[in-house]
Length: 224
Image 1 (spheres, rainbow, N blue to C red):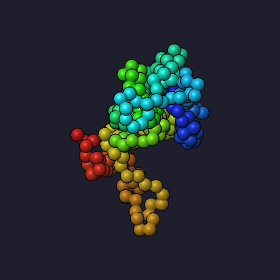
Image 2: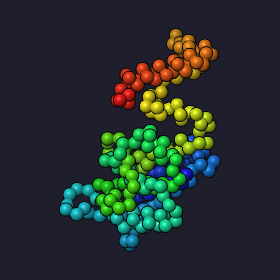
Image 3: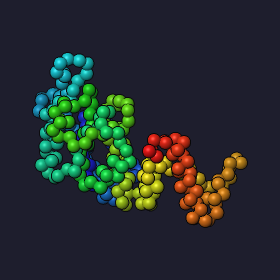
């Protein structure tokens, strides 16, 4: 998979992709990640990427020219399955969306700033708009990092145990059941006996029951 991220703060995105699973995904060749500084495409001498909004009001707006130019350049080099804009008023990110996007080959992610981007970008160039929650961040970079992590970990070969992602919360509209590890008893707190039994049929049944129970308690909306 190839992912191109468009941003005015490229340094902000170095950390999330230089360690752990995202680093290994790139080293193994499962992920090609390119971060593009939108300022490099500005036609102004000052490399401006924003301007005052028409109609007045507080806050600047990201200019159409540099964003359109970088998208046009990338699109001339290869075909993109999705051009995604990270925005608070986009589609709420769900596991099903991550599953779908993990099957794509090439994706562009645009990180917004200020009051957002000139809406003509959204009308004519963006194919999908995603929000990571009903709140506002300073920019789209953190949201982009969340989106990339949630997608890439699903690509076969990225995780050491490929079945791990299949048992995560939300994959089957249930939350994950409780998990335990050694020691079997600590400070009087014991691991459920069924998990120590070696009876994998009963263990699987227990996990299914606990997943349903936890979902009913914490996210009953998932069961609808």
